[in-house]
Image 1: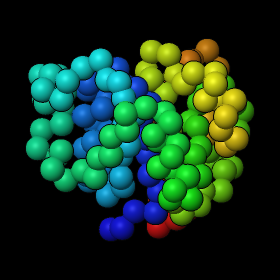
Image 2: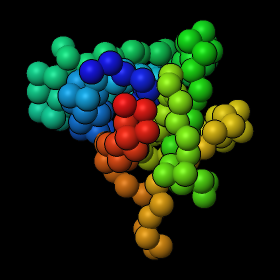
Image 3: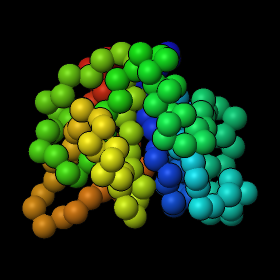
Length: 152
């Protein structure tokens, strides 16, 4: 399966979530970007236990910082879309396009305001009232299911 979209994790801080996203990327065939810094190592036992042997099957692209990621997305003419709880625009109503990159913020803090201000496209997963958010790896899986439905 060839990919038509990409996922990006901005400075994720939970090794198990990154590992599960890598496994999802490996199994479903989409590139996964990670923007540094990470506060854990890929040798962390929590990471290794969840990623198992899927690293070799993942098209993992590491970016040293936000600026490097934006340079990459601009050079590939990719549209960057923020997945956030800070908008009402449902991802079900969003028309995804080939080469889109959906970016997910840090589990503990989301994305900085400057990034929210810079990126035009923002989507959310509609949830029940009185709940805050889904787990990062779960959010990635939910959104890529809709992107795949639209593009593949």
